Length: 547
Image 1: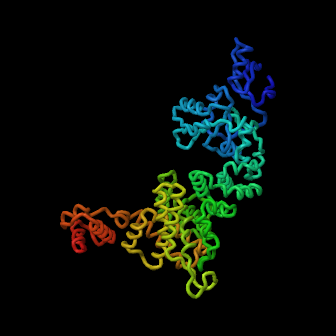
Image 2: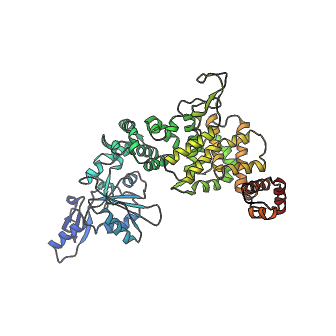
Image 3: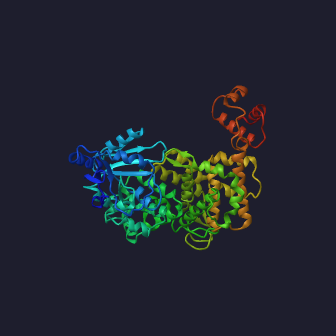
């Protein structure tokens, strides 16, 4: 059998076992074979080095390889899909590079697959194909530089600067000019050169996200480079910063993300209002300053989410109460967190944003009782109306980050209402139907997030459940609120109207105006409280209560 090793990394045209043509592409090899052996039939083969390990690549590659073999230019798979394949994972975001004509190729691929293609950047010749499954993206772009090596060296981190010829299937064919495989094995995130982060400062956030997602560490020199580049984030588009920030919060360690952002100087650059909470001391039961407490809340929140998610991972025994008491509401909560929100975020992300901002109003509302100087250790520290101030700050910040109005409004309600479960728990008794109605009337569906946030907030403040009676009372309030929402919604949360504005105008000879709204709200609250059941009773109440 013919030894094909001299042709590693190239295509060959074979007539039987003889090489009739070679080329950097299948088209070139075929053209050479037709010139040398015009009467013979041949087969085309890409030659890989021996001894390679098959890479776990998305199944779509089986369909794409024959299409790419018809192209006159070499095509390479690059970036995250190659990185993750080396880690034994399948990534469905596929990035391809080639010398020229990337947009044209994306449309040819889309035509064959019967799906649409999109021009992402006409000037940079970048196109995208999205498969019907909604999770597989094929991005096509041209070399960013004179050739493939220049393209790879110009990327962000060594582990993202590895390429694979699109025809190849094993790790023996990898092209790795920056030694990214060694960093993958060492589990290190390392920038490629001195300008890697300054060329695109959003890479500072991306590097941290990669480290958290993969469980890697930042190389010491990369941590220094991130800190140096952080101030340059002011020149990056707000949308790109927002996207990276949200992805950081969506990792399994949002607490570590915020902590590391603070350590690396990213928090001041991206979220100055959050950074301002560092060093703002609090009275017991709090044992941390406001920023450290916020980070602890995020840590406990993920644990509470897991306690309600049933993912089977071990949890602190202190969270057994949550699993036992609230498991029946977990499906409803999961659906609430998985819902799509305008602007491309989901409900879980909004909950975590609410946790991030819940105490953002404390720095500007901090006071110390008269028996202590403002900076003295004595005297009780208070934060009057920090929830309302924080809600306004959160709304301004999130609007600045260009989140949708729907997303901003929901987070604002979480922050503004995050103290409500604690206030209800102080009553020390079963919640009245009226109290439940008023709670959800004030905060809407954000009330679900507030209940879960209150558990994380309590656990962070006490570094665990704390006093049994206080923890039990909060758990009881949360369970009651969730029960009313998920099992008695039309009874106490949002009762179907017994009358409408037209009924009041007609039956009571009222004129249209604000009074109609006031009476309708009064009727619905009385209905939720169980005091009204019929249309006639509703009209009678309105008659008695009219101005």
